[in-house]
Amino acid sequence: AQKITQTQPGMFVQEKEAVTLDCTYDTSDQSYGLFWYKQPSSGEMIFLIYQGSYDEQNATEGRYSLNFQKARKSANLVISASQLGDSAMYFCAMREGNYGQNFVFGPGTRLSVLP
Amino acid sequence: AAGVIQSPRHLIKEKRETATLKCYPIPRHDTVYWYQQGPGQDPQFLISFYEKMQSDKGSIPDRFSAQQFSDYHSELNMSSLELGDSALYFCASSSDRGREKLFFGSGTQLSVL
Image (tube, rainbow over all chains, first blue to last red; front, side, top):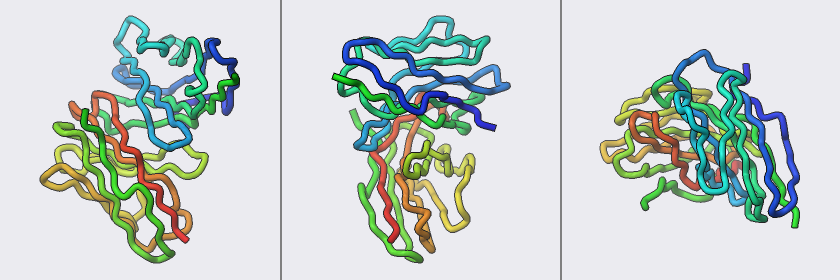
């Protein structure tokens, strides 16, 4: 079964607007971590933001914030004030358990920022 | 700051040939991962090492093998290459046995002709 679901294969957003990329996950572990990575067309995988399952506050990193709803098992990424350089694939990922051996990715969402 | 270094950046091989991909993790990171990403796919976990010992295995074909050396660099060896092995291969490293975030290298783009 798919552990990470990203229901939006593609998204468009106008420059300077905010956008939310959806991510839901499935785990029976109490301790886990949720990550978002950005993959531009050049191919590299860039870490954006991390949320631990025991973290009470939503994570924020500059223009990125993670809307963590534990009961709903969702970890949506919010990008504020979109820039043209934000156009890329975005992957939600999860580390299950206390160690990083089980680290899986979702199918990704392709974000296109329009001028 | 030092990042994960992968070499080569691009590799072109023919069917049935062998390939070796190298990965140099961030200094003091204790866990190394290998991922395969096919065109338009999400990265698929192949194998991981913790402190130079294999710790977990994913969907890695029997034709592939990997190891981590005493200096912590890792190599992914691929034999009897098939067309379907064409993909972007990522190495990632993490500290604290993978509790921390994974840092990825730039990947090796393997093309099998």
